Image 1 (cartoon, one colour):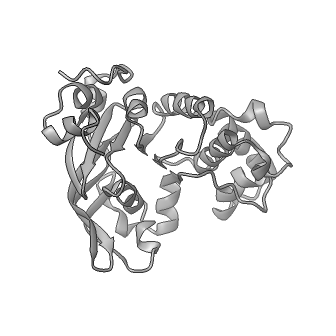
Image 2 (image 1 turned 90 degrees about the horizontal axis):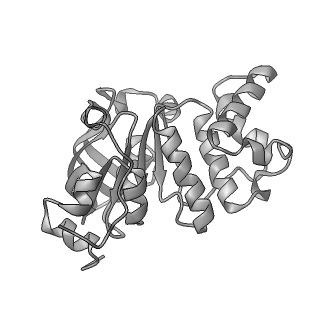
Length: 268
């Protein structure tokens, strides 16, 4: 039994973790030009739960989640093969704009739109999708900021620049922007890597609150964060999925020695 990581994940019902996945990939391969980054990955993401993806730098974690809402294909030279399913439907049959409304994404560094104020940042996706009624926008922006645990901090700064907020507030603003269009799945790529411990704790608390409402996939280099926030954890190495299981099992009794070596610090 591995003793090096003591933090255990939130209690989880077995039924919830075992439910049919909200999203899944089957035999997914992806890369850039002649370089293959993902090698036959098959993985499901449980509905209304947090799945963490861990692994050393360059193992394909970010490439994997960027394929889920078809952002990967926007990079020149990018390619992918295999199946990516949302509610059992191939994502390549879904219009990319609609797909990214259903599958939102938050990036490693906070990226509020620099020419927009706080209100406009949150409302951006709504206006893009044709919501123009001011009362509706007011209601949805406030709700989104409340869901992102940010309303009380910015309710008097809605006309101020989004870039004028602290780093942690900016990241929660980006989460509010993603939540405003009511996604079914929220992807987060190293969302706390640029934040201090206090801001990181706020984001983690937020994820624990949001997981009852939507499916969350988080890429993280922080194994303690994966243990604190997720029901399931997937370990990737050199473009391959080594294993995915209930988080407590991954961190105490992994099935593969490579996983044990990684989480105990023998490499990576």
